[in-house]
Length: 407
Ligand code: C6P
Image 1 (cartoon, rainbow, N blue to C red):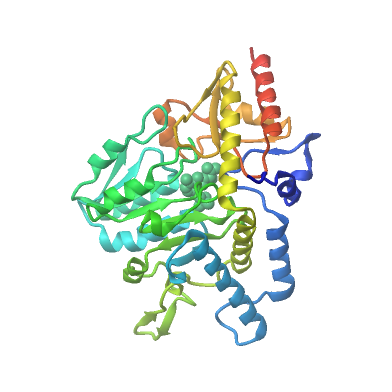
Image 2: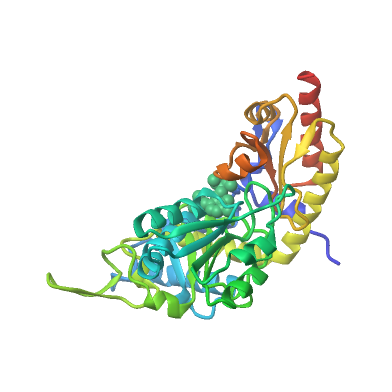
């Protein structure tokens, strides 16, 4: 077995070299957004220095070069998630926009009063609010599959909620607040057995798990580039070609049309039908570079290494008296959400920052999860491929100190 090239990986991320408040930066806020390697940063600056122009419009060399790079990024995404065709890869701003796109196109075309949309109790607001808005507009009903105190989906309850009225299932593959990884392949199969399409929110899963949309057989898969070592402002909606073809466009404007007259417009084919206006061109090219970077290491090696970090951090955290881990599912990604007796998560976050440690404290855009656990917030340490056990040790020491200070 080859060892994980952690020293080389860390040297690829220039931001990690700095000190914060005179302490080496420990960046444990990766579930919110992760840092970018030189390979991505350089790719974007080279692109602006050498190749930048608008795409799909110009006959000049730069426009053609920029178009080629943009479309190459689409192919890289296609291969990364094993989509059948590049036509199934729609570039959007992020997971949030992708879900809103589906709600406003597929949803408005296919969901009517009395129909049901099924989500789970561990969803991020991005996979709740767009469906609520759709329900308000159509008279459809939002159903929620419950979770247990470990933060695991009650699978049999999920199955029971799949009914003749269910017209769409939208679930997260990995919870951002708890780390729970859902049995999405089984969930897709159960929904399909009743003819119900499934959207998977892959915002958290994509940097940690190998994704194969054909093996999952999901109908839609959404993710953001910024959690995948790519820039913010670029994300992906994957959709099965037949579904995307049948869906009306989302936004109207340049690049998404075939013909326009004042009487009527006709629309471009896939994927351009869903990409109105000038997109985030350099960031898309940067997403392609991030995928190259991940492939150069191997996503499965990254997943194994991060799992090791999670297991180690969990073992250490369980030794700390007064610390409660929120989310103890058997299948978990590299997220450790916790509370401390007597210290509010926001204070934990601020005090850890004074030690150079970046975590997220709050409700993590998952208020219903906090309500379920009857807590206002958690502190959340989330790990990426560049984190180390030594960082976890320092972090645990800092947490132990906090508990001492607060008695
Ligand atoms: N979660 C977190 O700190 P956007 O903001 O569109 O890139 O991603 C939204 C989103 C959707 N689903 C899940 C499961 C997510 O975790 C997120 C983003 C970040 O947990 C920012 S709130």
